[in-house]
Amino acid sequence: MDVITERSLAEQVFLKRFCLTNSHLHTVHPQAFHVAPQLIGVKLSSNNLSSLPAQVFSSLTSVEEIFLDKNQLESIDPDLFKGLNKLIILDLNYNRISNLSSDIFDGLTSLSYLNLGWNKLKTLPPTVFHSLTKLHLLRLYNNQIEVLEAGMFDNLVSLEELSLYKNNIPSLPPQVFWSLRNLRSLTLSSNKLREVPPKSFYNMPKLIKLTIYKNPLMSLPDELMGHMPDMREFILYSTNLITVPGNLFANMSGLQQLNLHLNEQLRQLPSDLFCCLPKLQKLSLRQNNLNHLHPQLFAKLTTLAILLLNGNNLTTLHEDIFQNLKRLNTLDLKKNHLKTLSGDIFLSNTALKHLSLSENDWDCSCAIRGIARWIKENEHVVYDKDSVICDSPFYQQLRRLSSLHDDDFDHCDQKSTTIFPSTPDNVVEQTQPLHVSSTTPPVTPATSETSTTSETSTYPETTTYSETSVYSETSTTSETSTTSETTTYSKTTTYSATSPPHKAHIASPVFHDKLVVQQGPEYVHHNRHNGWVYVWVLPSDRTLVGFLMVCYILLLATGLLLIVAAIYSMYRLGTAMEKLKAECVHDDDE
Image (cartoon, rainbow, N blue to C red; front, side, top):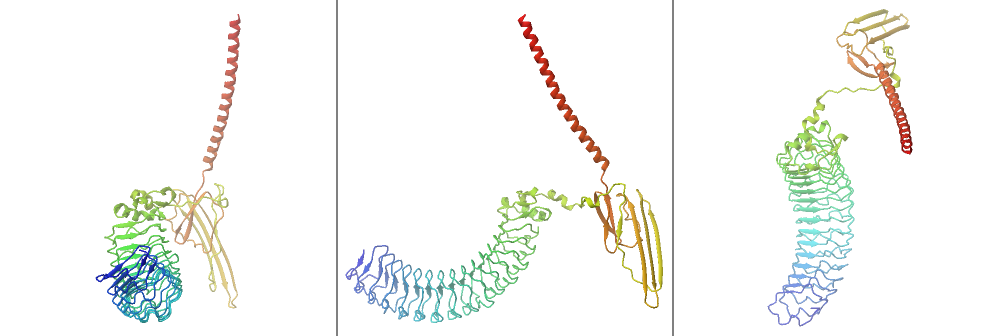
């Protein structure tokens, strides 16, 4: 049917609801419904209507539902809905409406559902909704709204759902939602909000859903959320936030699901951010830019079951960070930069069933031993265990953490000694002793005192160790406060690398300023004892090096001689063969 004429519904006295959808309807006669005033529902969805006569519904005084969605309507006559005081549902979704007159909904005192989504509205008159005191649901999503006028929602005291997502709203007037005390769902996502005025979401105690994601928010005020004990879901993602206020969720004690993810600039979270969410079951912090989490960040989330931390820049986690999450059954840590974890980090998470650890920078050196053992013992929990592989050190790369054994870490329990190779400055001939000198130690002048100290000590060991120490000091102080001081300190030490002095009593004074190694052999390390620094040396065996070098030269010369001999032998063999061949030919000729 392309046209509804004035007689199309004639004699349909028992017809209560008229429905004509998904047809090519493009025209409705102004008197089309005058012959059916008993109608309580008219549905003309998914047609080609571009306009409707002004008085086409005027005779339908009992109508409760009108569906005009998915048509080509570009404008609506201000008198189109006049007199429809019993109308409850009006759907104008998916049209091309670009403007509304301020009185278009006047008189619709029973209207409960109004859908204006998916149109081309840019502005709304400030009083356009003032007569809709019984409106429960208002949908304005997917328009081009650029401004919300202050006070435009003041009379919507019964409103429970307000959808404003996917518009071009750059800012909110202060207190624009304060009259909506019965509001249960507010969606402001996919707009152009860069900031939100303080206390914007106060006086909405029945709110259970709030979304402000996909806005270029730079910051949020400390006083933003009012008392919202019934809030069940909060969504905040795809913003430019670097952090959020510590009390952002403090008034949402009933929150069950929190999606604070996909914020590429979000680097840090206050330690008390989740302090007051005793009913939270799912927390998504995935794909932010978090590089550090406070050890007590999740301490109060005792009912949390799902925690998503994947896709951040976490390099480490405190061993107690999940300690109080007794009901946690799903934890996603993949796609971070974790190098290691404590082996006890998941001990208290007895309900854990699904753990993801892949795509991290696991360092499979000694520190990984604890968590590697835990993974091996709980392979049924780590569902991506085959992808949890070592990134370093190089000799462990691409090895699965679950394949690491305790004996792979035996070397971690052994004491190690670091050998520093010699440099040209400290290499000397083997026959020369090591000379150690120090700068003059600090001397405290004494009044009228002269002292001379000389000490010679010899300590017998398996190898000879000897030390000669001479310390002398002369101090003279006159009554006229003239002080002269001469200090002579010399120390010569000669010992071999196998003569440990730890059993000897060292009576000589310690070095005060610096230790200068003037000459030294290949390897040097030191020990400290009673304030002294003992330098131990391991001289290089130059005789062995010389012997090996001679052997190398002899082997090289022998090889060359063998090559020459082989070439000469081949030459002689060729000559002999030619001679023999010539003799054979000669014998045949005879």
